[in-house]
Length: 261
Length: 341
Image (cartoon, rainbow over the protein chains, first blue to last red):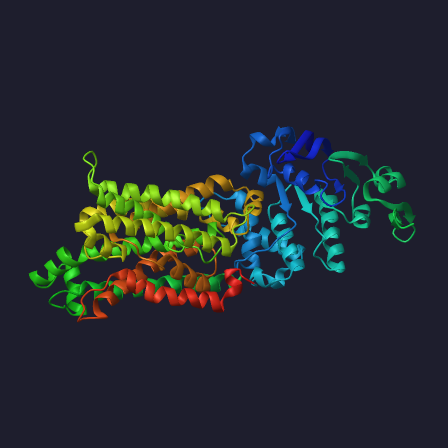
């Protein structure tokens, strides 16, 4: 689906990513993990050409993003960024409707179909009741769900989520990620999640990429990636991956910081 | 979908209100002459009826001024709305950001130093546009901190650059000698000397600039959320922003070239309209065109009737007398909207 080939990115001479390769498969949920400042968000921004890498390229179903217009990219890849401070009093419906922008001509208004897609996206994220409220009066968590609804209104093939659970209450964290998982199962939506929330990524992602020292440190299933060795080197924690009997899934058990002794 | 219909009705009501205000003050303003006309007389004369004297007053004497007021008001209104969206800041306007001062320095140079190879009629707007562009990029460059434009830096950059440019205009005025009177009057804003020749130059520039702005109104909505949001939604942000900045400079320069500095139209009008009808630029930009025209028409009428024993006041004084208190009110009362909380 999305192929990352030899990406290098530096910010004012400071290397952020070096020679990163990655293949995102259709319908999978893949997590990009790493400590703060390791270049996770940069990688995510490169995935929809919001940032231009100095070296390497990104292919969407074999097509170089470099050769696609921003509009065409936005028809296939939707993004939920980390910070969503909005100063102007657009209503929730206004914001979610913007998800239809890549499909509309310059003077073309939203059609009935477009508005149906918008209402549906608001239902899926349980924000329909807020539809007419101004966005600048809402909490960080509510805003996050609005932006997720906007991304769904783009009817994308790939959705990129940057720290999707950061501002959310715990019940909404699960609600949002359950929704994303359902969409990937039912509609084949491909999901890339950037996060430093280890337990969450382990619970929802099929595969994960561990970024360390500007490079892909490990890539594979949670069992393959989250070895005690990797967690010590990358996060400086003593932790093990266990099989959780209740969830019937792998779960991280964190023992503590490596410096605690 | 009830609320969507409700908003449509509200938008229609706002437009209807603006057109009514525009119409009333247009007729009232047309009626102002050395022999004052009644409202009805002015209205019929505009439609080509009534006495020959009335028709001459309306068509030959007053109409150019009224048309110029409508054009300039419309241009300043939409330019203000667009700049507030580009800078993501409800305090931005051609006047606050020093653009009007930039344009006036260009125009003052054009008025002071005549050249033989270009008529002054073209030289003035051309220089106004060049200086306006330069000011815009300078203020934008100064106030941009890592991709964001905080209110404080924006206002300070605008004030600093604007003061410098105003000082240069004063210097030119001082050196201009016999032409001084004209320039002084012109820096206070003045519609009295409007004529069809000027209008023929101003109108196409303001039309073209406004068209570019209205065409980008949806992209502008996305840009109000932030550049990253707009990019994610498929907007070619850099290209659209450059187009819009050039269009704003074009419209401001055209407005300032022949009538001088008229402040606060671009601040007050879009701001009130945004409170009335919401921030969607697809409705707000056309409304700012009509609203700007209506506001300036009203101010021109006031400038003629407010002090009958002094005569006609420069219109820039009226807009500032109304606009500056509103600006202060914004600072005090609507801090969160302005982005200071």
